Image (cartoon, rainbow, N blue to C red; front, side, top):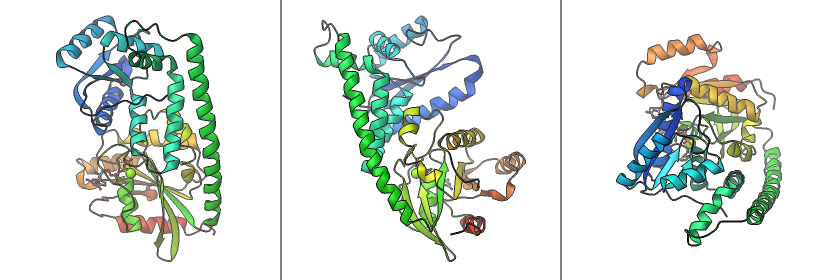
Length: 370
Ligand SMILES: Nc1nc2c(ncn2[C@@H]2O[C@H](COP(=O)(O)OP(=O)(O)OP(=O)(O)O)[C@@H](O)[C@H]2O)c(=O)[nH]1
Ligand SMILES: [Mg+2]
């Protein structure tokens, strides 16, 4: 039922649309999309950024650009087209037909990365749920793949009743998965009750900022995978750590990204309950990124959406070893954020100020009753 896309070594082009006001934002998004596509093994040949006044509904981009794309695809033997925009089922279908190439959107790419990275059965189930929901939202589109499988040209396509059967099956699968996940949720809640006397800390932040590196440093073990990729971590890892005589539970969670697919946020809510239940959050930020202030906002918005009971947050600006204009950035940060005593500048790679981080964690949580 689920159509998986094979990205490996496929010659790929990326397309993003821009309306007057969001040029910078789209540039950042397409840069990220490029990393995401490469993570999946695609060979990105070119990025197209198309200014539009109003999105033409049928193919998202205008006729002229479609023609340009078509010939580029033909000449360069492009096999995959990735859109930064979310595409409706009919846009997907029309674009694939016109461009004679496989077309996917940003949400699909993120879902595929998550599905590849998930290790635990719980994370796998969460991603499957998100994929089912995504498939449901694109349902008529799935049939173009089935048509191809059944011999392509000449096949008349599905009738309404077949699409309806497909829809029904998807809904059934979603219901079944949700039921299974509820059972696991219950078990996890019981486990958590046993660990109630420990202070809980979660590492949160944008993807690729160094959360897992810090997790490994604080837990003095190589428990978390560290990679220079977006979304290295999609499973939550929890470890006991000790600072002075106080014991804590530290969790490393999935990274966030701008426009994180809603299907994913929904199905990851249980994993993210580690964050909801935390007594202290360590918000890690990559200070080398120009858009780090925006990243802080995205993360704060997602935190608002999933809910958290604590107001205790340490903002940890990481990667100072690699940061150009560190002084300028530090003064911007100090001006912008009032709660200056809960801000730290560190390098997890060079272990700079890790001691300070530990002291801060200890000092902030000292008064939490256990
Ligand atoms: N230069 C520099 N690189 C760092 C530092 N901390 C982490 N990195 C690198 O940044 C990359 C991402 O680190 P991770 O710890 O995997 O980041 P993450 O936030 O867990 O990423 P996801 O799990 O993908 O969301 C890796 O290549 C790390 O080696 C640092 O202080 N300085
Ligand atoms: Mg990680």
